[in-house]
Image (cartoon, rainbow, N blue to C red; front, side, top):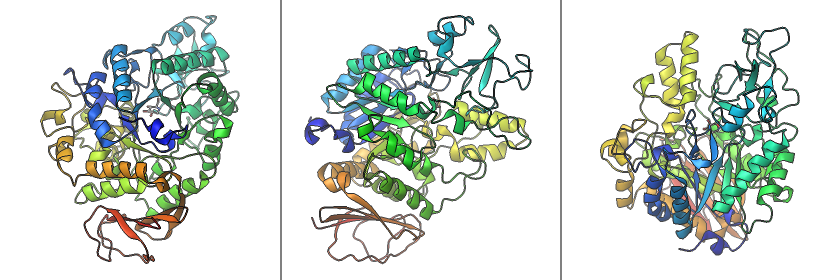
Length: 568
Ligand code: NOJ
C-alpha cells in the first residue's frame, strides 16, 4: 500500500492525514485476560487500513501500575506486560508501516508514576542526586508536616483533593497535579529534560512516527508556585492559571524540537494536549517557523456545555450558535499560521453522538452528520475508536460499574459532601470518561467480541446492534460513510487547503460553512436538530456531493447533512 508521505510528497503529509485513536485497554483482547493488548490491535490492522486512516495514536502502553490506565508510567522504555512486549510493539510498527500507516505514541512527561525508579530514588533522601527531578517543598511556614493546611500551596489536584502529598520518609511534600501516584517532574532541571529527550529519540529510532503529548502545557509552572486565589469558604483553589503555560513553556518546546525532531529524516508528527489554550496561544505553538508543535488539542468546544459546576456537574444544553462560533474562531484564527486538530471525542470525553448528536432515533444520521461537519473542516481530523460505528455513552447501573479514577474520586468527594447517589450517577452517565472506555464493539457476541474472558469494564448493551461486523456488512453504515469522508479528503485539495467561511452564523439549528480554493467551493449544510428546518442559501451552480439521506427535498430533515460543490 502507498504511504501517505509518498502521496503528498512533502513534509506536510500530516495536514492531509486522518488519525485514529486506539485506547489499548479497550480495543481488542487477544489473550482472554479481559484487557485489550498489542496483539489484539495487530489483529485489527486490516480493519483500520480498510477504514483508510493514516496514523494510529496509541494511548500509553508503557510499564505502569495502571493507577490512571497507563497515564502513570513507571518505565518509559518498556511495554506493560498487560499489553504485551516490546516485540509486539515492533510488530505493530511493522504492521502499520507495511499498510502505509504511521504510529503516534502517547508521551506522558508532565509526571511519572510514583513507582518510576526516578521517583523512588528522588524520594529516598533529601540529598539524593535525583531529589530535584520532582517538585518537592517543605510544609507551609508555621505548619508541621501532615498538619491540616500544611500543604506548600493551596492548589487542588485535577483529580480532587490537595495537589500535594506528604512523603513520610523525608517529611516533605511532592506535587501531583493528577493522582497521588502521578508525581510531577521538575522540568526546570535540565537533567530531567535531557532524560525525556533521550527517551523520545529512542522511540523514534525504534520506528515511531510521532507523539501526542499529554498536558504538555503543564510542564512549566509559575515561579515560586504561589497560592491561587480562593473562593470564600474554600481551602483549595484551582491552580490552573499558575501550573499551566508557565514562563518557560516555549523555551522547553523549542528545546525539545531541536533536541529530538530537528534533522530527522522524516517529519515527526506532534500534537500537544493543551487544556485552556486560546487561539492566540495556539498560533504560537503551531507556527512551523517557531519549531514547537504541529497541532494542539484545544478544549474550548468540549467545555462549552459545562454547567456552573464544570466538568462533572450537570451539563447545560449547548446552543449551536456558540459551538459554531467557537469552531469558526479556531478555523479562522489558525488560517494563516498554525494548524487545527479536529476532534469531537477521545478517551477523556463522553461519546460524540450522545453529546453533540442524538443517540436515540437519529443515532445513525447524527453520527454521520457529526463526522461530516468535522472531517470537512480545515485541520487534521481525529477519530476516537468506535466513533466510526456511532458508539454511544454506556449505561451505568451503579457506581460499582465505574472504573475511572477521576469519576470515582469525584463520586467519593461529593458523597462525603452529602450529595446523593442518584444525582451523582446522573452526572456520571453524562460525563464520565468511562463512556469512552467501554470495550470496542466488534460483534454482537458476549462482551461485544472484545474478549473471551471477563472485560475490565462492561461492554455497552447496545453492542448487539452497534458493532463493527454489522457495520462492515452494511454499505449504508456509519463506518462506510466515514470511509467515504476519509477518501474524499484524499481526493479533494479543497478539504485540506481551502479557506473556511461560516454561513448563517446566527441560525439556531443549522451549521453551514463553505471551503473555498481557487474558484472551487465545497458547501456543508447540517441540521443539528430532530425537526425539519429550512435555510435560505443560493444553491445555483452547486452539485450534490454527499449526504446522510437519499435525494434531498427542499427542507432539511432531522440531522440531515448535505455536502455540495461548485466550480469543480
Ligand atoms: C490527560 C489524559 O488524556 C488523561 O487521560 C490523563 O488522566 C491525564 N492527562 C493525566 O495524565
